[in-house]
Amino acid sequence: MSSESGHDISAPMTATEAAYDRFVPHRFLELLGRESIVDVKLGDHVEKEITLLFSDIRDFTTLSESILPAENFRFINSYLSTMEPVVARNRGVVDKYIGDGIMALFPGCADDGVRAGIDMLRRLTNYNEGRSRAGYVPIRIGIGVNTGLVMMGTVGGHNRMDSTVIGDAVNLASRLEGLTKNYGASLLISEHTMHALEDPGAYCIRFVDRLRVKGRYQSQSVYEVFDADPEPLWAAKLDTRPQFEEALAYFHIGHPEKAQPLLEACLRTAPDDRAARVYLDRCIDAVNGGYLEHAGEAAMEMGWREEYGVGVGEIDAQHRDMLGRIAELVKQVGNSAETVVQTLEDLERFISDHFETEENLMRRYAYPFMAEHKRQHLTFFKYMEQLKAEILAAQSDRLLLLFRIRLLLLDWQINHTTKSDRHLGHFLQRAGVS
Image (cartoon, rainbow, N blue to C red; front, side, top):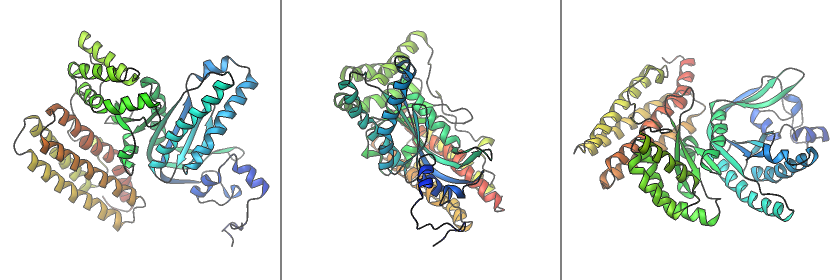
């Protein structure tokens, strides 16, 4: 059996192809639709939804300055050789090594990327035990994971090219890896990865920040995955998670005085929880100085902006109406209106009709990412059910309910509109829909 280029795709790789496979993984070639490295051309590209993982060794510069260059290379290769099989076991592929850093791709599902991050951290524990026995200091790493649409392909010149992945999703994954330093966290994931998980409850996850990304209209929610934390700290974080997330909600809606005692209680149970310590210091500064630094937007901006448009009239009109309905829900929750449940149910019906409109268009014009898009719609309905249950229970502080609406409805809607729906809008416009 031969490919269009004449290569026997059932034959084993030649020694040359096997050597190339160590530089350009065969899995990457498969994603590009190429059987062999000799088939790859400059500018080959394909659009995919994938999960990206960035990892980096903490304080690597200081560590490397204390050893000889040859020892440095041995150390890096020892560490990277330990982590590469972990990525492969979780159906991932290492796209590139960036010094001591790793950039890995998971084209299967978001769970693969998150599981790989957890497994890397657990493998690091064993690796550090070996370093300690050999008389070396243990190392720490930070990992950032994000999920989204990217362009995969080749860049460079005709005499020297490289495989790469380009897109906002790549930049956010890298940003999350860097953010791990701020909170002493080992593994951070974006809200996009959180929403894409088959069952977020299968992991130990807590909300940890709202990240303002350059060029984006709405803050991105960031979550910590702490499954691989040492046993005492893991148990303490799990025990204090409700208090911690409640404290962060108060902080991010501009009430540090309510957050402070909750964080102090968290630290009594989990004194090594660096994220709780960071937020407590911010609360103290805010209460004493009157300046709320590092918080997300203190007030929700819910109005329609022209920048939210996707270029398809029917979809844009529905998005505008949806934001208006969410604004009405916020108003009624804030005022404890008796009609809030009816408003929520009306919103749910409206959104169901809106999603049906989008999915009919996707089906009619054969949108290639329909499955991923529909999965996001299903995730939104799960959040709607959660929110309805919280409102019906009437046990939460109204401020906390408003923050939950921001996270589960407003953030999701605006980020979905300006990413996934915009991609759909561009596709439909090319198909002649306006």
